[in-house]
Length: 111
Length: 144
Ligand SMILES: Nc1ncnc2c1ncn2[C@@H]1O[C@H](COP(=O)(O)OP(=O)(O)OP(=O)(O)O)[C@@H](O)[C@H]1O
Ligand SMILES: [Mg+2]
Image 1: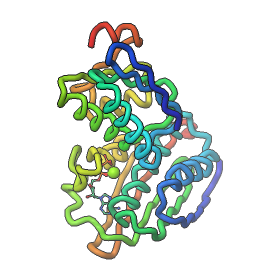
Image 2: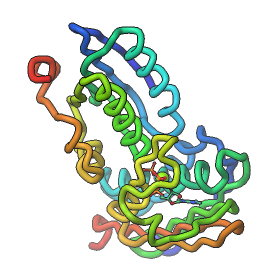
Image 3: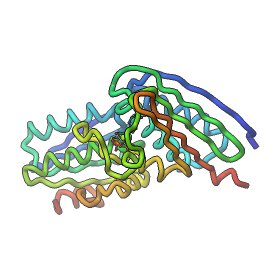
Image 4: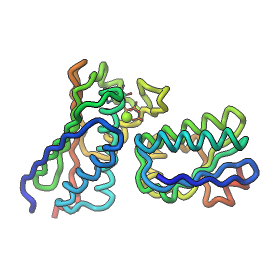
């Protein structure tokens, strides 16, 4: 799993590439949390274009980051979901707490 | 027509074996000529059952997980078995959003994912003996 970060005006964009399961979730979680803490992050945006596999462990990762930024009034967005990942998001009710956007620009504007 | 086929796989309950397990089962299922979508359903369900065996069954202790797959006609039966701590209340465990380990950032969606992606899911479990998850997937693509 490859994790890339971009920071725009205190918003953290997390681009994930690879398979998000229980094995990879641990490192991904630690890396994101470090970025959030070091950069005084407000909102977090997940770019999931490169995620070609995700199971319930991925739900836990997104939910956990949602809770973390929410404590400081931040919101969570998601862009570029494959139809598979979208299915899992729908099933778990993640769209009740995480907003889906067309692209990075829209997410940055609307969060 | 593939006829009947069977395989058995035994591996250690290490998290790096999660991707190994789902790739092996998907490769075995491939002889039924499933669609990409059907194969992704199988991979996700296997990943859920194996992850549960590692996290809940063995609670990160290293022991053996066994997967058995049987192909008959147009369907595959997949059994994922651990000899770990077992499930106290299966009905409760199956409920969406129920997890016994919220502190590990589990969402309680594993069994719901398995039930959504597979045609049948049966759980057998006994305290301190272990858990067997039996799943069946029928491939529409080979019902011709
Ligand atoms: N192999 C197992 N051995 C012992 N207990 C299990 C096993 N599989 C599941 N359980 C129990 O059933 C509960 C529900 O499992 P399920 O996979 O639905 O959710 P989860 O693993 O807690 O969270 P998630 O799968 O969303 O990360 C678990 O919290 C656990 O208590
Ligand atoms: Mg689970």
